Amino acid sequence: MFGGHVMPVAVGEIDRDFFLRGKPMARVQIPEENCEIREPAEIKAFLKQYGIEFEQWDVEGRIGTDATNEEILEAYAPEIERLKQAHGFVTADVINVNPETPGLDEMLAKFDKEHLHTEDEVRFTVKGSGVFHINPESAPVFAVTVESGDLISVPKGTHHWFNLCSDKTIRCIRLFEDMSGWAPHYMEEPVHNQYSPMCMGPSYLEGEGGDLDPEKIVQF
Image (cartoon, rainbow, N blue to C red; front, side, top):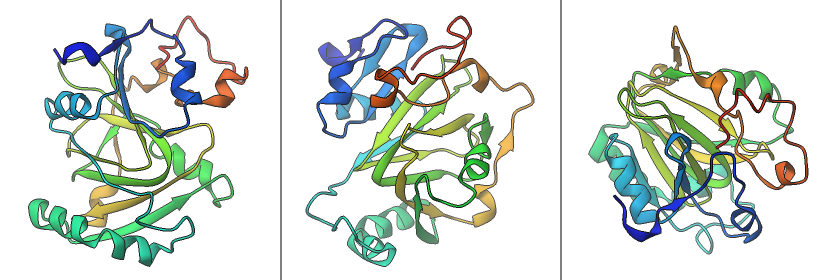
């Protein structure tokens, strides 16, 4: 459907080159179809089918590695204003999460279970990476790995959950219509337990995959 760049992979297969090449790269993985999409244009086209918006904004050379939250918001003010005008967002902020963040595990536990929101969830990743797992009504579950430079907008009402990658680090811009719309509404029969809870990275390749039962887990 997306031309010659859709990369079929075996479920559970690890693409070592992906993790070792060092360049941030978004990707979509559909384990039940044994395929992976890496080309930005094809990722955008695939996600559009589900109402999910995907863009890529420059990061390198635009903000410093030690930029403050205020400097980040100022640097991306034109893009933020465009999204506000197009979608009715009224505010934006920057969240900075790392292993030293107080209450990190409790924070992550709110969003690593299948849920939905009553407004669109918009995130632009400045630093780090994470995975949005999407559970469409009439299609297989797929995972969207976002890294530095990736913007994703998940429509309200979409069943999904989110995991950080193994370094538990992400810094991103968030946009809101109303902060109350950010609250998760959990599913009565969630499917998140059937899928690997974290994206695989260097630590996984080094043999730190954890104690997940391979017979019950679909590896993204």
